[in-house]
Every structure is written in structure tokens, then in C-alpha cells.
Amino acid sequence: MKFYIGLGGIGCKTLLQYQKLHEQDADKKFYYVDTDPMTREIAKNVYILPNAANGTGTRRYAGRNIVNYEIYNGSMSEFFMDIKRAEQVELIFSLSSFGGFGGAAIIPLIDYLEAISWKQLQSCVVISFNENAHMKLGFPQYLVHKFQENTVEYVNELLAREQEVDSEYCIGNQFNPGCVSYVVDTRDMNVDEFWKCFDYPDHQLKEIDCKEKYKLKRSGEQKKKPDVFISYSSKDQEIADKIAEQLKLSGLQPWIATQNIKEGSYAKQIMQAIRDTKVFLVVISKNSIHSEQVKNEIDRAFNRIKDGLIIMPFVIDDSELDDECQYYLCRQEFFFGKTPPIDDRIYELAKSIREVTGGGED
Image (tube, rainbow, N blue to C red; front, side, top):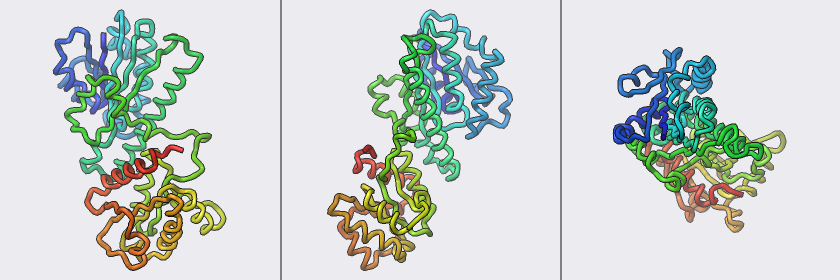
């Protein structure tokens, strides 16, 4: 028997769309766990988390605490009784990676459901949907960043758990059989068609899985050399920070002065970073065109082209290049961030950089 479990608003909505097409399938059963009482009006087999009148929003700790409380006090035991009694169990979870409830509640629920069904459990699959489709809906910038941070935390918790379960101390399906997780990149997807992923074969899910771009490297694996040097005017700090953040989410190591300059010679560290980097990204604006610091950095980068350095100008306004900038940059491929929303242009820029660097791998 396949048990589908929707977690949180997006997970429940997506699973409900899928259920409507499969309600007659005798081998499928559907559960919904949410903080919104309205879910009861549109679905059956719904467990509404109490003590969540204000919702959990982006607060992951609140989502996890609430579901842990329900598990530990035994409140969920009767709701999931069919899973405990089934002769064979396949678990399929539906959720968003970026919310405050679904992505936080998933690991406690996996542990709980595997514990009550481990003798019968055949497989456990987690299908989550990242924030990309929703970033286009005009959310405030602080919320977009929070969504991305939540996905990063969610992915790395899942990966850590998978590594634990796959260790040499777990034999067969003793204790927990582990799970297979996919984080679906939804940038080119319609939110009303997420449900189609539940019928995708494994190889198709692997193709759209984007966990690697959120994966944090362990301290022992940190790369000593940057992938991308970001040259910019301090007046464009906000844009530069957005670029650095997106590069990190894309699995690349940026070098940006405000985060990487340590004690010691400022000029020496700038020179070393330009020598070490693979891509020199210069943010072109009216501010940077008049910045002597930026022009010095462009000059140093220009002299490294013969060594294989790639220079990528990213234009964010309509300012004309002066003679110096034209001399250094006239033969480089330009990328443009003038057409809003800027977050989408930065995402495309990071994707292009990832391609030319081979994905940021050493």
C-alpha cells in the first residue's frame, strides 16, 4: 500500500490535486497534516496541528516543536493507525522545502512513521518543491532570502540524516531503512502542475533534483580558492550581496570584500583573490564606472585573461562605459540585469557562471 502524506499548505494542495485523479486507486491512501484548519474543508484524512493559530510562517523551529509535541504525546497514533497495521508500506511525502512547517516537520515524521512500520516498510520517498516558482510572485526581498535559507537548512538536515542511516552500523532495514529525497527545481513549473512529479520515474526526478545547489560543504571540504571575484562599487552593495548569496546557493564560492577581507593588507588580499579566482564578475553601473577601485580591479583581471580568467560584466543600469572600461571590456560577453525583477536576472547570471566553471567543482 502506498501512503501519500502532504505536509503544510503547498504540500497538501499539491497532493490533493494528485488525489483527485487517483481516488479510485485501491493501492493508494492519502493523509494531510497542516496548521491551517481550512484544509479540513477540502480534504479527508486531515490532521490539523493545534496551538498554531498564528501559523508557523517561516519559523522552522515552531513547526518542528509543534509536530514533535503531537508525536510525543501520542496524539498522532490513531491518525496513522492504518500505516501501523498495513502488511506492506510505501511512504511518499509531499511538501515545500522553504516553509516554516513542512520542511521542519518532515524529519520527525519520517522517524515516527518508520518506527511504527519498520518491519513492513518497503520504501520512503520525499518529494519537496523549492521556492523558485514562488519567488516570481512579488514576495518582499527579506522573505525571499528567508525562503532560500529555509531550503538550505532543510536540504542539509535531510542529507545529514541520509548519511546517518546509510552508515555501516545500519544493516538492512534494521532501525530505519532510510529514504530517498528529491528537491524539485520549480523555476520553470506552474504551481498547479507540481502534482505531476508524483508519477515521474526515479531517473526523471533525479534530473530535476536540485539538492546539490543548496548543499553546504563541511569545514574540511571548504575550498581555499574562490570561484568568482565580485568587483563592484560600495554604493551597489545590496546588489553585490544578492549576487554573492545566489552564487552560494548555486554551489559556487564567491569572493566579496565585505565578507572575505581579513586583517592585514587590503590591496594584497584583493590581488591574491583575483589571482586565485576562475571568474571575475564586475557589476557595471554609474557608480562603478566612476570608481577608481573597480577600475584597478578590472585592470588586474584584464592581465589575467591570458591565464584563463573569465571576465563577466553584469550591467544593472543604462550608464555608458567610459573609455577605460570600453578598452578593458569591449571583447567580453555582457550580461544584463536591467530588466526586472533583478532576482531573476541574478539567478540567470549564477546559472551562466556555474556552466562556465563546471558547476563550481574543484
